[in-house]
Structure formats: C-alpha cells, structure tokens
Amino acid sequence: MTLLYAVVCLMMLPYPQLVSDAGGGFDHVVQITLVMTLFTAAAGLSTWLLQKRHRALWLGQGVLVVALVGVILFAVTQR
Image (cartoon, rainbow, N blue to C red; front, side):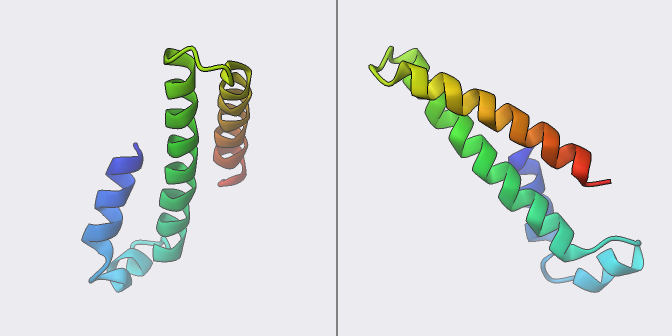
C-alpha cells in the first residue's frame, strides 16, 4: 500500500491541479504517503527483530502494536 501511494504521488507530482479539480488535495495524498511510509518502516524493523529472535524482541512486539493502533487511528481520523 505504501509503495502504491508513493507511485501515485510521483505520478501526480507534475499535475497537482488535476487532483484539486477531482475534489482532493495533493498535500493530503503526500501526507498519507509519509505516514504509511513511517508505519511500514516501523513494522519492517519490528518484524526483523521478531524473526531474528533478537534480545529486544519485546520492543519489536510493542512497536508492532503501536504501529497497528497508529494506522487504525490515522485511518479513522481521515474522514
């Protein structure tokens, strides 16, 4: 999903007026992309910690829970 939003941002970069004409905002799409990138990076690092049975395993589990709650809250507050 993050990669899809990144591709959409790159495609819309030269034509931000088309997004405004469609009833959206280019800045909103960029905001969603940045937030999703942050959550994806946190989840990726946490998953790596869990798979490697790192001694900070508990930290990885906590970050995954926080990332999940954060994504849900972000999605709910968008509309």
